[in-house]
Image 1 (cartoon, one colour):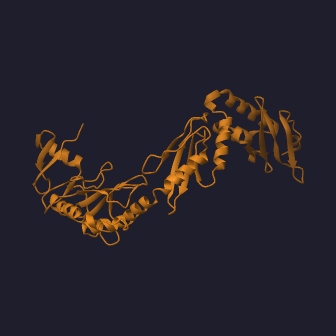
Image 2: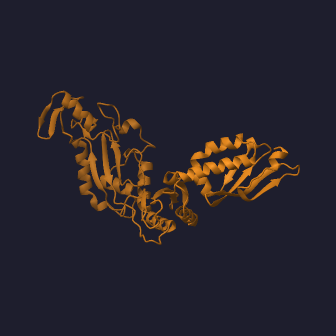
Image 3: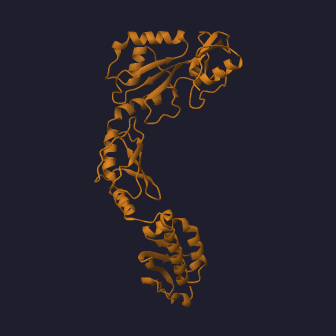
Length: 371
């Protein structure tokens, strides 16, 4: 900067102090800028030339100017003096404040939320919305699994109970009063996470050691798994997240000639179930089989692709209708088979459509989907 710039008048700034290098060049300006009867701290760092300068300011002013960042940077680089830039900055800030609610001006509510966030030490802050209406935290459980919680806050109203979205298998409920703070909600969330450790451990073992057909990408809230047992044969289990060692609800899917023996074994061997064993080991014990594992079983051995569209997943669903011919046992998506039979003008009776398997011509039927 030249000597004229270094002696510029900055009367709109109170307590504004220029810092100089040994050769007399200004390095940083720091002070308070008056905007609509409010004082805001700003600092301008100048590494030799003003066109390379950068602006720093306190949170309140930063929030008000968030949507004008590109304009401010452009004016900073093209200004001929600090005085000129400060006048433009003041004008831009006053314009933002003049916009009213759309500008989402800083308030004591914002400051309160920041204070509450800083109080949290046991959880990781993952994300925060620019208007502080939504805050995302992450909590690690005993097995280092990351669980996320989104806390939706009523902007400007600290007395309104927030809405929490979590990945827990049951709805997260928490005690709330006008004195409840973010750290109290997160403490209750951590306590809830501790209640599901055995459940998640059991599901994690299934996911790592079995061929999981559904859900395609399991999350911590899912309480069911559809597990491949062989070619066109699977079992869907629904686990009690509060009693994961108990016998789950089991539904076998496949040709009746293949599922009937498994259902019979389940009914006969219930006495073998022991709560001390893992969920997977218990299932193998009562069904008297060894579940196929990705480590020692090929994909073709547990193939479940639809015989019409040749895909496994269709809009998050897997084939659920299987040809009863034991030599065929081809699975189909319900929607695919329905469209196939409907286009062939197959016979319909009440809510069922009858026809032939597209592969072996064995008789097959499905329910007509609800419109």
